[in-house]
Image: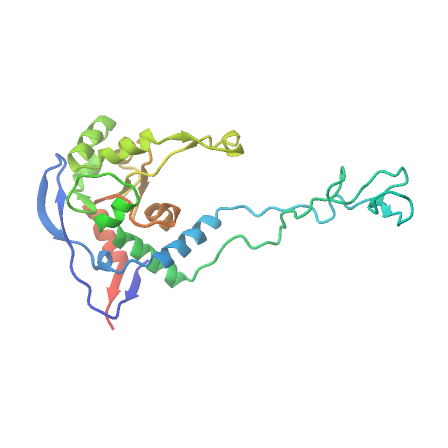
Length: 271
């Protein structure tokens, strides 16, 4: 699907160098116009919350839970609290009694998913893509890198010629982004709270995002187990990849063909 974004002013061109399989800088290329869009952090935050809450499963309690009882208050004049009681004088029904109803239980009819307009969501993704090309925003997210050009563009041969993690590490060191994966590894920690017992024991910071043409490429298998790494394709690229936590500016590596596919998918139209 092709998305067209109407921009009332002319965008400036951005040029970056792209790199070979050996990590050597080649000639300059012009990024698609989508990478020159203004950064709308408000839309990015809304789109992230919409995508994040869409994964939450609605839950709730039985509305009659704890209320199926014949307990009634005995009234005043008995020297006891005026709470509902069963004939044996044991308190029931109230939230602070044994077996009573919960005070403010989760409701199954509560709207958890925050909705967003389709055009706003598309513009948020395009704006998050533009944020990946601004070093100041990427560095403000905490990413560590030494490359001069962002986003990092590599030739398509990388997808087929690099199939081992050892070779992928050597390439990322030459590109200047391996230090960010090291940062993610050093900051892996045990989650605080009960979530550590529910299959999410460790918190792993996000590092590099790889956008390639196909998930089945050898390069995807070579980098998928690096700490904090995510892999996406132009068709499956979402705001969750580009702006984890709702903060734009993720350190991103594109292959040349994936970059062209993104440029074809998100087009800029001047009125």
